[in-house]
Length: 284
Image (cartoon, rainbow, N blue to C red):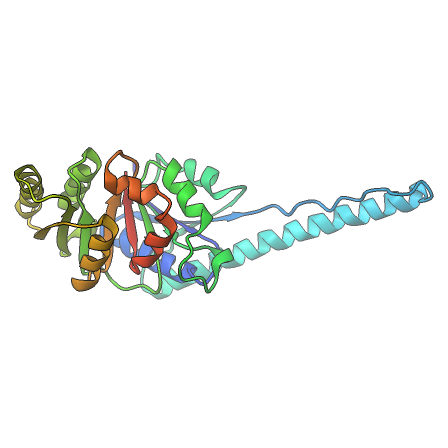
C-alpha cells in the first residue's frame, strides 16, 4: 500500500501552515499528499404555516422558492470548497512540491477522517479552525474529537511554517512513548533533526534506565539525542524546557493512564496545547 499524508483544510487563516507542514512531511516521507476539505451542507430553510388564511398556492410557491434557494446555497458551498482546495494546491505546487490529490467530502470532519485511517501514514490539521480566527489560546473543537478517534499520528500546526530543527518527545516509559522512540529512530520524517527526550518525575534508577535505553535506540539509529529527567509539575517542566531549548516540534502520546496522558486529556488540555506555541505531534 502506498504511503499518504492527509491534510484537513478549512480555508481559515491556518490553512497555509497546514499545507506547508503537510507538504514538508510528505516530501520527507516520500509519500503522496492528499488535501481534504469537508463541507457542511446548509440547513434547509423551513416554512412554518402559522395562519390558515395563507392560500395553498401561495404557500407552495414560497416552498418551491425556498427549495431553489437551498439548492443554490449548497452549490455555493461546494464552489467555495473547490476554491479552497484549488488555492491550497496552487500554494503547494508554487513551493516546488508535486501536486496533491484534492478530495471534497460532505459531513463531519471526524467521520471523513475515519475513512482514511487505514490509508494515511500521518494526519495534519490546524490546531484551530475557521471559527477561532484571532483566538491564540483556544483549541479547535475538531481537534479533541479527532485525537479521541483516530488511530494515526496527528500533527497539529500552529502559526506559520518553520522547518523543524529540534524536536522534543515527552517520554514517560509507556508503550506509546516507546513506540514514539522507535518511530523517531526509524522514520525519515525525523532524519537530521536534533532529538530531545524529556521525562518528568522523581529522579530514580528505574526512570534513568528507561530514559537511557530510549536514548540508545536513537543514537544507534544515528540520531542526535539529548535527555533530561525533570522534577516538578508536568506541564510547567515541559513548556519551560521547550522554550529554553528552542524546541520547534513537540511529540507526545495520547490516552494512557500516566500522569502525562491525564494532563493531555484533562481540564487544562485546551490551555496547555495552545501555550506550547509550536506544532504538536500526537502519537498513537
